[in-house]
Length: 139
Image 1 (cartoon, rainbow, N blue to C red):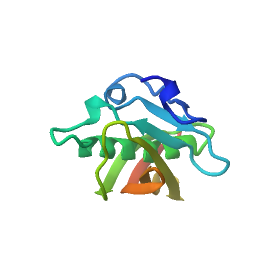
Image 2: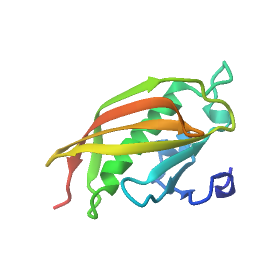
Image 3: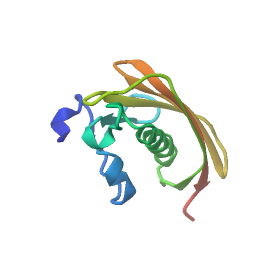
Image 4: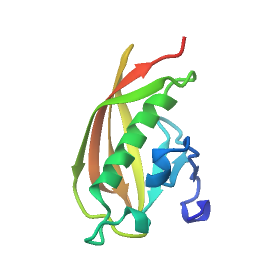
């Protein structure tokens, strides 16, 4: 799918190549306050044998959104690594659905960041998420 399939304001994320290429494509939208919103259009490669999105897709999306919020929180863009990640599934997601992640950084320490948020479809939560991230600032 192309950027045309994303709602207005979303641009391709352009994350570095590798594993994230398999789970996306991901999109970003700037917000007036707080972390950028991460978006994902559900495509055939995200679907499991029950014609619903695979839970691993939502968990990867949660990790992308939470860790990107930490990365994006500082101008120097620190290196970020996941320590702990929890995803709670609230409802099914189907082919063609557009998902958006709303994230808050609950606490940003010297070496550790704590975040939480929701994955939304049409403004309704389909999953909640929380994570703890190691933060390595560049010297």
